[in-house]
Image 1 (cartoon, rainbow, N blue to C red):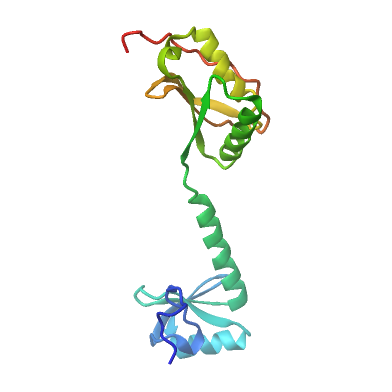
Image 2 (tube, rainbow, N blue to C red; image 1 turned 120 degrees about the vertical axis):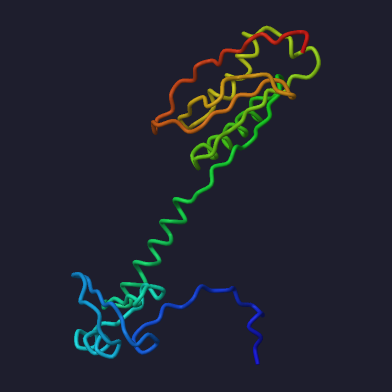
Length: 198
């Protein structure tokens, strides 16, 4: 005998239809509304007379609820609702991208392309401008230009979620997808001169 644990993914409880329904009494509905409470045998008879199926839709109700409808259409509608629910349950993450003062244009283009893809998917993007040693104390205007280099290469509209601030790596700015489908011209982020006591 084939073991139930081999090669099988656990499935949710199967929807019962027609003679699979165990409850002797049901509250029956159709596409027009409620037909009232009746015996399962009577409900199946009505469904068959209409050329449809009796489908148990709320087995834990008291009494259970069943619907007279086309089973194929019922399956399609149920699967569509599940797909829509999964799509709405998309988890937003914060993706990290690190750049350096001397990052080449080619590398910036690649990082900007990936960042744009993440923005399009609805994720936030944290851009880290790595500032080793004394580069942390360079002119704020120069640091703004370094951040602006990658912002200008983004192909997705974005807005600043968190203004540039000092981080262990240097400077960090967080952006997220904007409301417009068209990319706006980037506004150079304002960088506050870091304290030399930090």
